[in-house]
Amino acid sequence: MIRSLGVVGAGTMGAGIAQIALQAGLPVYLYDLAEGALQTAQVRIEGGLARLVAKGRLTPADRTAALARLTLTSDLRALAAADLIIEAAPEQLQLKRDLFKQLDEFCPPGTILATNTSALPVTELAAATGRPDRFVGLHFFNPVPLMALVEVVQGARTSAETMALAEEFARRIGKSPVRAKDTPGFIVNRVARPFPGEALRLVGEGVATPVQVDRIARLAAGFRMGPFELMDLVGMDVNYAVNRSVWEQFFGEPRFRPHPLQAQMVQAGLLGRKTGRGWYRYEGDQQIDGPASPQYAESPAPRPLGLERVWVQGSALMAGGLTQPERPDPTGRLFEGQSPAGLKSHCPRRLPFDWIEAVGAAGYYLVGQSSEAQVVLLTDPHELTAAHGWTGLAPGALLLWDGSACDESFLAPHVPLDRSLSFAGLPPLGERRLVELGLTLTTKPEAAEQAAQFLHSLGRETEIIQATPGLVALRLIACLANEAAWALQEGVADAASIDTAMQQGVNYPHGPLAWADRLGPDRILATLEALQRFTGDDRYRPAPLLRRVVASSGTFWRG
Ligand code: NAD
Image (cartoon, rainbow, N blue to C red; front, side):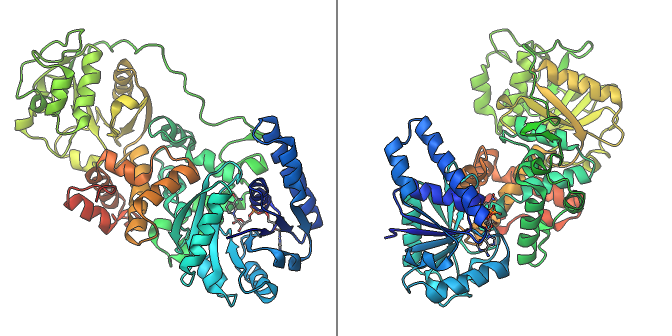
């Protein structure tokens, strides 16, 4: 059992770790070589505890007792009195190795040594000591007092007893520990790499602007913050350093390859909030440009003139082979004798049903053959068959096609593309306020305008970008799910730990594996295969485990 704590480095992380251990009743020895850092840490800890008192979550007497348990020291040897020492010094391998070598020399043999490193190998740090069995990674998240997650990282020689003690300690100080094997980036700093990584590629390829990517990430996928806002918060220098470190430790694996834009932002000193400018501009704590908060219309826009008849691919199938157009009535019945719930039970996938529901509710006529329609919605562009009601396009019809696993080179031989756009096929549509629309190289501006009006009449916001498989939201999610699948397959952690870590460590709306299960592992696989084909880049090659899950019609969580 851990009864006292030593902390090396009194910066952002060290001060936070010291504070929560003091709150939990442990004596804490906090070391830093910079005198000023110790003073700053003391002010920080006092401020943190005072805020808890103000909120009524700590009594003034407990605060006084907590502060009395704190020893600030500029003598590293003072830490020999602690049962566990957590190092939170700068992220430099040699500096950390030197510190651990010294600690190992004078600490009693039973003392457990731990590192808060973000991405350096725990095993390599442990090798600087004569006690690699009593050496562990304890990776906290910033701000420490608020973030529940701690990754407990098992080095190649960390003992089971040390893992158990470290986990028990994390729980005792009020955190939720997840176990991770010592692999580059552990769980969070590895699985989260595609979030900034794909965002940078989307901008680099000219698919979308940073503002568009951030808006889509928030409104279409439900992330709390877009990837560019997040890079500005974390700091481009930190983001780039962690990215490089993980990439180098994987010996140049293309999934982790940094992007030239990252290097350029660092070279230009555009580091984000801390320098007042990164992808966006800041004055003090205020962001003064970037994605505006969404202003939703009170009610859907009117239907655009001249667009009345809509064909949704799959609708004939779902309505039990019904091919005659029927006007949807205001009670929500879309076809004679069919309620939306009845239709849903025929629906092999949610997506066509979602569209039928939205199109019906906006008062459009649903027609049974594509050639009768003014708007054609292809929910499965790879299946253009007469059996599904495909009879070609009427002249001047607007064509919207699901771009989740398709690019314009597939459609070009079959249909004219100048009045066509791809849309993001991320179900369920009902939860989404924003639908992405992707321009082909030849889409006419008036077709794009009409497509946006059509979606506005369904009560949706739009973002018009360039067509790419998955567009923005699904490309981000597919790459995150793929990385989680690689990590699961490599035994970094179990599915529950991976998903918990991503939700608690970086606030994702869903764990990436549960997200893949919800969207369909087959859809994630199809998006990745389309991206690999379209870009020729092996960073999109699907994890073998993802293929196996799809082949067995299984899910990550159940099987
Ligand atoms: P920081 O710069 O805020 O603090 C580092 C402290 O270490 C400073 O007070 C510095 O004076 C002190 N220091 C420098 N050399 C030292 C030495 N030889 N011995 C003892 N102290 C020394 O850094 P931070 O953000 O707190 O990061 C610390 C560690 O935690 C790094 O390994 C970092 O990768 C990791 N980490 C950081 C975050 C984060 O978001 N900041 C999150 C998780 C992990």
